[in-house]
Length: 303
Image (cartoon, rainbow, N blue to C red; front, side, top):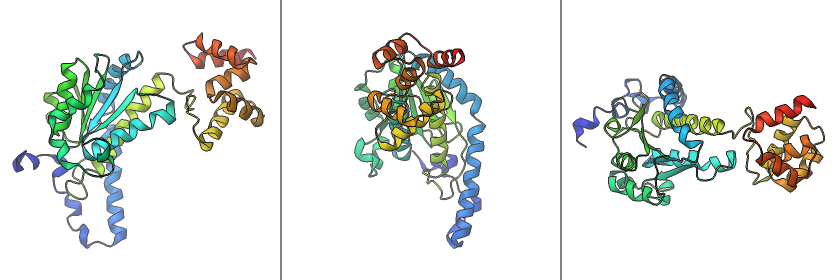
């Protein structure tokens, strides 16, 4: 990349509001950072229709076994891994959304800055997963021109996977290689070029939208309740108790706790309580339906 090219990227430009930030009192620095952050949600909102159209395309394959891959370098890669890693405890989702960072696992803790310039490494990283046309690859890069992310898009296209570029700059280079792009105009950073700031926040907001919406549409929630929560610690156990109580209106929390300790599963516990059946019968009932909400609401209505 030439100096002339980098000067065209919005996240690399000078923020006129912060040129004297090094002379400001702490309170004014914080207020200025906060003011800039308030613009991020509005920038994301401006792209909602485009994001929605892209999610519609993703979910057609996601519902039937397609996977979503996030790839990026530096902050972009870390945010992808962060979002993907939350799918297991939140939705009990195994390897449906996968995060990959340039430079590998060590890059999560320590910067491996040169890794972003290796376009070929993205292909090597993805080859381990045997991409299919049902899969989606979301290449993330604040500048919209990161070589590693471009490599991911190229490889995705070669495998007929759905290739999406996620950038914080308009008219990004991702457009040349992606099927579709999401471009958020997060604007110049408080510290010029420090894309861990507004660009990072915008990236996380978009990833939140994509993963959460896909999981909702796959039936991983009951209303806004985490019906597939993975019970892996005490906090999540009692969250599961609360969820079961809200769905079934069962007042005896000790009864719920006893069943949950046996099932370790919110869905099964709800069915056992509502249908007054044992674990084996509850599994049969669940296997017979494709829509847990319809099953539960029909039963509640008839009680």
